[in-house]
Image (cartoon, rainbow, N blue to C red):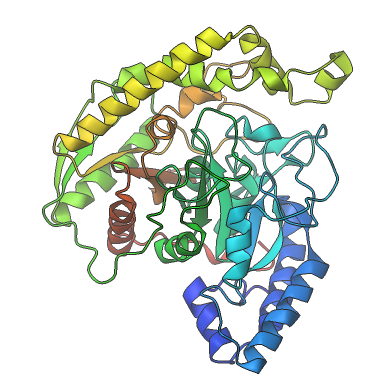
Length: 471
């Protein structure tokens, strides 16, 4: 068996192989760790690989199978955790040299639920410092590389998670999304990144960024995303924003017949590179072939997003202000510049921005209630570009404002809507592009139905080299 063969299998396949005793969890983890050890020097996707912890958990999982114990939905399935979520015994560094290197005392709720379902945690994945941007470098770990092209960004902030998913290394990866951080790396790496309705997955400890951060899965397939989400979702007392609905995948037909879909090429204001726009427009037309009614739209709330998005983004930054010049030099300099711009934000400013956010979210909610089932947009305005940059070389240079090419992402954090990035093709330069699918709050299964229908009609092909040991 070649290295990575088990590592690249789906959740359903791995769980079935374990349950029927055709493959042991130990065999799976040994293959995964061998695959990881080959890929890590090339991708730099991990902050920490927990060889010992993963092997111990695999042995325990094997004993449970041998004893005939009841098995969870993810029993023996490997998973990675983004390095802003707590894993007991491992540090939470958040891409920063300024964070505490002491191990976490206990798992975050989402992590604990993955373990309870039988998943085996392989390690912590890389992210930019404090998750402040959507590119894949940090002062702590350096650059995470896109599997499609070494030296290019994997996106962020769930950078390592998306890079590993694209490389066919493990089926599921935990990400977080405060302004696109699951969907944007999904777009850059050509994988499925899903931000569920706010509160679907408990986010603990609750992140103090004005209720815009979500936990979501990253995977190659909709089925794997849904398998992960089903076990993480649901009410928890530690997160007052969590809700009791949970998540259950729709079974049976993924029909698009009769749905009314709005397609916006630019939300009325966003600059989009032509090669991205062309692919997304073609993807929107495909939904008509699937039986939906697709209508070009320019929602009135669209142009209100940029100013509000930046106000909300800046509101949580002042507490990160470095204590002195030496501390500032240890930070990502773009983050330091961003903090400096917003350091004088007052409580009154924050309260005013929160009020505007609620009005903006209501506008988006009313737009969906007005008759649209789904909204389709580009996931981002650009394809992957070289690491170390905040924007492609052909875009204006910014000190910190990467949001200018991510204007499609953060509106749905502000509005708490479910949104997914789904790969819809490659640019002429061979780089992935993501189609964003959005629905009203709590219509998460509809987003996944549309994502599955699209990928069934237009499967996204990964070059074999991305999942081979010599990738």
